[in-house]
Amino acid sequence: MIYFVIYDITSNSKRQKVSEQCKNFGLKRIQKSAFCGPLTKNLAEMLGIKCKEIIEAKDCVFVIPACTNCFKAKIIVGEFDESKFEDKDFEIVD
Image 1 (cartoon, rainbow, N blue to C red):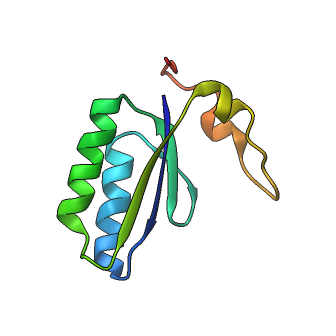
Image 2: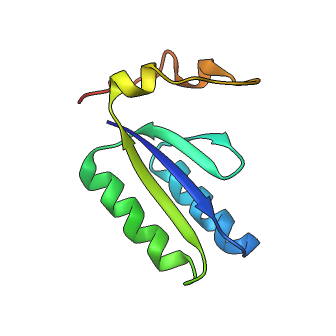
């Protein structure tokens, strides 16, 4: 399953730590405060737990699942490098 991680974090250092966690889980940055990529449900939950350990009460992190068909039906407005998600050595499994 594809997951989107979108966050609103005040502290630069905490925002950087969440960003690093997303990268550690193999997600790719799609916006300044948004990542996307394939995860299992267990890995998504683990990422959520790690983010919770990092952020403060006033901060927010969304971990949002999207099935493969939903992801394929996305609408992109503006410039986006679709090649970030092509020819990767992973398989998306629903």
